Amino acid sequence: METTTKPKHIGRNISRIRELRGMKQEALAIALGVSQQTISTIENSATVEEDRLEQIAKELGMTTEAIKNFSEENVVNFFNSFYDNSGTNSAFGNNNQNHFNFNPIDKLVEAYEENKALYRELLQSEKDKVAYLEKLLNK
Image 1 (cartoon, helix red, strand yellow):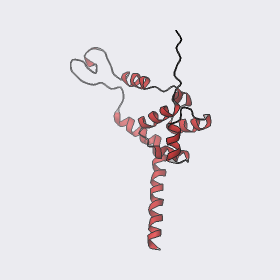
Image 2: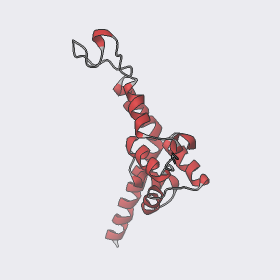
Image 3: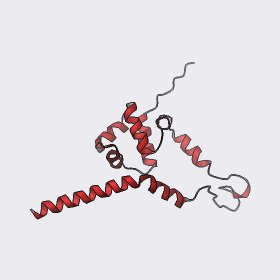
Image 4: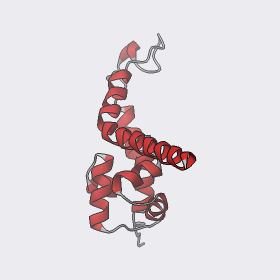
């Protein structure tokens, strides 16, 4: 019996990773200097040019290999590894207390620090739009 492996859909992987990172298509588009429609097209493509994939990987803070090998199952396994499943301190133990190996506030600060430049760019873009509209209104 012959089994064939289904090729990875790189665009779908990019989409899921972007969503898991809490990033909108528009934000990724701005970071890459392309339109939101271009990001949509990329995410609907089964394959992505290596140069473009490297740019996207950089903006998402990961390697091209991580994007190529991404799977939902790996994400679930990764997050399940944060639970201490021994004795009564397990996630579903007798005292029903969750035990995490990370501080959620640290993760929030880390996410902000990683995307600080992008946030500044988005804020500046909005300020530029407001200035332009004010200029139009004053004419």
